[in-house]
Image (cartoon, rainbow, N blue to C red; front, side, top):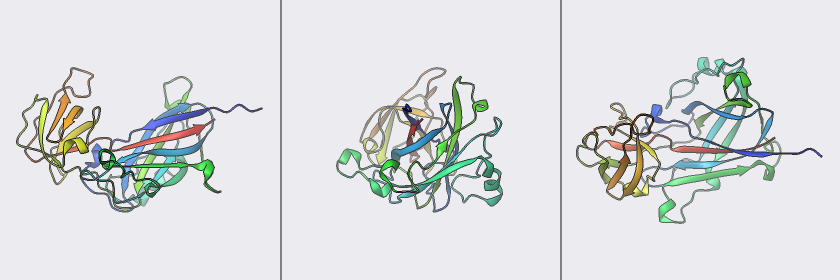
Length: 265
């Protein structure tokens, strides 16, 4: 009898480069190649699930996005797919062609949780391929490159995301008045902060147009409707120093999308 083992991998793509309050259009790159490590060997991708933060305290209106999986070759990562919040250019796409492992389209219409007031600000999604018909079942086999990681017994695989509908990660949570550097309590107006953020979230502030003056990161400790309490720490902490924040700057999630991949070896 062949023994099988299963593994769940959590991935948090970094969307700060996209400036999270700028909406995405259909066909635009949502996040570029994001590396993750899995144990050596060939693994079937048997399910994809996760959460996606919504817009201004409500769930996303868009429901479709695509995940593209790739492997390094001889220790080299796939080339960038181009600018975030823009359509993928053919010249960028062709450079990754030989790295591509596979692709899956995610339909969040399968689950948008609007049951409780405390959960309406994000979407949940999930698909167990074993319950789907061919050709989706066991969609692809993830096999990376052990030369791409220094972790013994592991290999690196990459995932990128493309919007197949309109998405907007703006929060509508705005700084109320100027916030001084070093202050651990950020006064808020606009969308209630406790409808959008939870302890442990990594946040930053940006002007309403999403065009300039991104602040450094802060880690949420607690929230109320009109205040976000953040943590300040020393070197190696997620919030080494709390930045000054201009009045009406929007507070955004750095990692609004969380992917959870189920693998079977």
